[in-house]
Structure formats: structure tokens, C-alpha cells
Length: 163
Image (cartoon, rainbow, N blue to C red; front, top):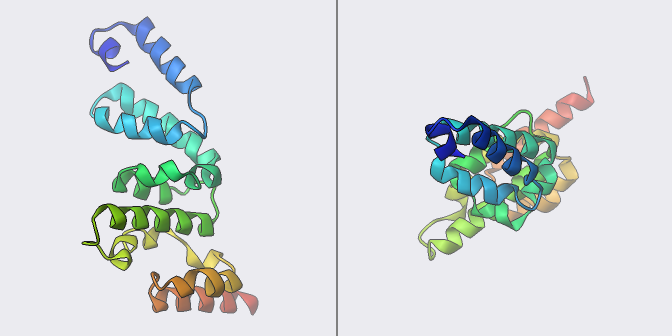
């Protein structure tokens, strides 16, 4: 695709983009993103990545729940989790960030602290949108989200009860 673009083979470039676009599914999306990462300096790859991100936006909960999501580079995970267009609930976003962080810590042979790794993603998650019962039952006991973040989310929810 990029070679066709470089050499001005417009019909071949369109055919390649069309083929890859047809291959974007929930099962292939993370592999395509990981592969595109190697060629991101090319204009064609950037337009392909935009199409892939639009697909991820529409199928957010499914894509974030895949084990292959944890294999993406950190900056791609942050990009996806921070997208306003992402159609995914906040608990799923948190679980995806947690899974990615756990995998990162495991692959570092214990040199990384889980709290430090996941802290890179916490600003991408709107914890106040996670119901209080789930925050207290599933998120807080893990001990990876600072108490002040949990307390702010709970306070926001309480304030909205009286508004």
C-alpha cells in the first residue's frame, strides 16, 4: 500500500486500502493496529489507522475486551482510551487498562509496579461514570486506583443525586 503510494500506483494503492479496510473486524483490528505501527510515517498508513480507529470507536467494548488489546504499544492504548468517540463503558476501559498494565508488569519480570504502570491510563477513565457499587466492589479492592480518585468519583455521584 505504501509502496504503491510512493511509486504513484494509484489504482494499486486504492485496491490495497480497500482490501485492508474489508479485513477490519473485531478479531483483526488489534493486529492491524500493531502492524500499522511499523509504517506510521507513511501517509497511507495514517489514513488506514484513522479508519481502524473509527472501527474501534464503534466496537469499543468488544475490542477492549480482547486479549490482543494488551499487546498494543502503550501510546496506542492511551490514544484509544482517550478518544471521546470511543463507544465503551468506563468499567471496560478500566479493565482494558488493568489488563494491559498487568501484562506489562509481567513482561518486565517484576521491575515495574502495577500502580505506576496503570497510572498512565487513569486520566483516560471517567470513574464517576462507573456505578458506586461496582467501584467499591470491583475497582477499589484492587488497590491500583488512588483513593482520592475513587472518592472524587463517589462525591460526584452523590452531588448528582441532589441536583
